[in-house]
Amino acid sequence: LTSRYRDAFETSNAYNSFLKSNNHLDRLPFANMLKAILYINALPLTFKLEPEYLHEQADEYIKQVKKQASIELTLAQALFIKAQLYIVQNKYDKANALLKKPEVKKLLNELKIADLIDELVEVLAKAGGKEKLSELHKKVQQRKLKASNSDEFKEFYWIINHIAFRQKTGKQTE
Image (cartoon, rainbow, N blue to C red; front, side):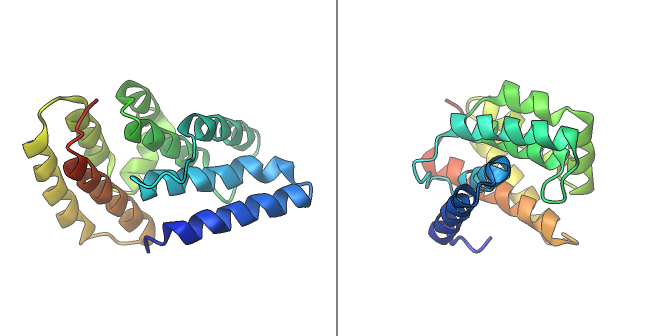
């Protein structure tokens, strides 16, 4: 939220190094989930992170969290992060498949963004959605003012920034 993406990237690299040097390799998928969060938030900065690698790591983390619940990121949160990766990659069918999972729907409803995420994906998937993207931006801005906790605010912020990125680059779809 502070947009200090370089610091976040350096910190995540230091955390990965710490895990490797202390032989906590089982924690690397979680550490790489943090990099996935950085990737989806820092766009257009990518820090040369590979989205396919981040997807692989997300899958590993999802396998772990299915076996044993995590206090860091829940299964629903991990699936949503993976869906966000697909959204930034313009892979809307794959994103939708994850967004329709009951645990993700429940999370998005709790965050009061389910309808906004559905609309974002729908608008991005259709060519010529510039006006609709602007309307969605206004809707999200208004709803952000009513955010009741930091988790909600963080997701409103991501949607707003992602729309701004799309408007700036002119890439509604590819």
